[in-house]
Length: 65
Image (cartoon, rainbow, N blue to C red; front, side, top):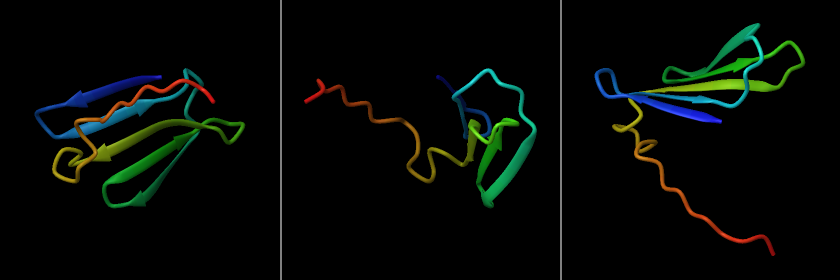
């Protein structure tokens, strides 16, 4: 997984896979999800990420139960 934040336009890109993108769907005006041929999610793009509370990310590490 690779997370990239672009300060200039407040955009957060979360890349989950290196598979080629074959389809993109807008979930709403600021959230876009890209899919691979097998239906798995490849990438999520969030516009106005900081403004909407998606950035900065809160990371919490825990041990498995």
